[in-house]
Image 1 (cartoon, rainbow, N blue to C red):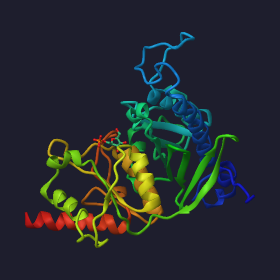
Image 2 (image 1 turned 90 degrees about the horizontal axis):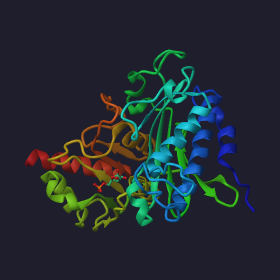
Image 3 (image 1 turned 180 degrees about the vertical axis):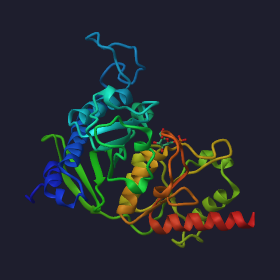
Image 4 (image 1 turned 120 degrees about the horizontal axis):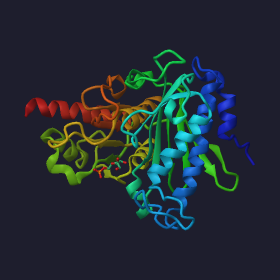
Length: 339
Ligand code: P6P
């Protein structure tokens, strides 16, 4: 049987590759994997536990207040990261404001984390894969001081590490510290994440396009034109592409990362910045796809070069195989010129 490398061993063995990082990053990544295992257990039991999908306020058989699964996941990741004393602040989709020392985080921590603790959680009651997305930065305020908004409003090109957990037919943790992308699959019998997808590369091209065509009438004429191109034999594949849209960002991203493809969540007339969040959805996935050789754009510029102004700001997202993203952005730009 081939040597199995666990995530913990991988982190220790590759620590020398973490640019300018101390063992604190290793501890942070280890805490994330622990929380992922705890959340995975609840995700897998969701259909079995009364009200696990219920709103806050319902109670379980022990009389404990039941929590919605995404609130539950949020709490587990916060607790796990706080326990390591290496994180001074957390920004989460589940919290309007960023969290600091009042949530047990350490003023002496050198990292901040942005996260979507359970993206696509509305899919869980129909047994569709969902995910956790995280993004790690060094703080910009002095160690020992209270974390501040400026620690969070950094462009994505300042990320130290990023990753996601996909709770699917198997549970995987995929992450990068800036030296390529590696995927680890949870071996349930051992309770260990084991290296299963070393040095993941985004296929340069691909035959898959992922977009919610139910919003087609809301799209710009230029984007509508691009979608017609995907359905024709005029795109770079020389034949019609396949439409694949799960409606769960992490699942769609993960499939396209492995098989090649483009995922688009565009701006529309009613929502010019689209639906997805820059800091804890677009930026971490953009970091990963570039580390794997792919591309991520908002339609006009590289996602990682966007300077955030708000914690929960949204941005349009074109992400996936480099040749497909390039073709989409160029085709839309040229269509706009002729409109
Ligand atoms: P729509 C889930 O709510 C989510 O944030 C992403 O996971 C997913 O890709 C997207 O929204 C789906 O949105 O508008 O197509 O239903």
